[in-house]
Image 1: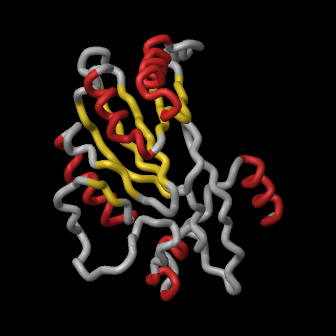
Image 2 (image 1 turned 60 degrees about the horizontal axis):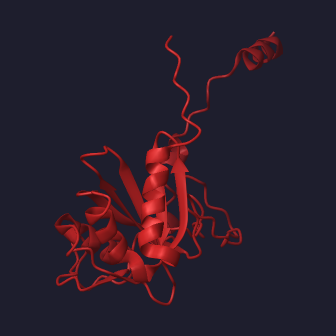
Length: 218
């Protein structure tokens, strides 16, 4: 069996990406994380979102757009779909715990871009205050962002200022609410438990448990 090579302790190429973005954006870079030999995340303020994309494209040569989406860090107040419902329902957990590069808000937008020359990827995150769920559109930066922003607007209720056509992709125009927010109730789960609950099979017993079962049966 081949041994997996150990990741380097320092990743100079990805650290340089963070340093260049910080040099160009200054205090607008509010968090970063480098996973050596693997990937890099940089978090910026909402006001610097479009500028961060332009710097990544023009200064760091991240010319390829991969995806844009959003993250709602609020724990699901209704529990996991695979958990059997209880009555009364437990008090919801509202503690916000964010991922790589940190965060100070419930909602973040995340976009990933790629460099053809350095072969590196970059994850850019933007914090969104609850009272201002809006960012400048990336359409002037990466044309491929069009339907990604439309989907995020539809599913999370985040606006992209300057986008000319933020119409729904999937839901009827009169639909109310944003289904990918954690506090959007999936009413079907209240009426009928998730089918997978009744289909769960017990895990195979280990050697010790199997021996105990045989002894009990004798």
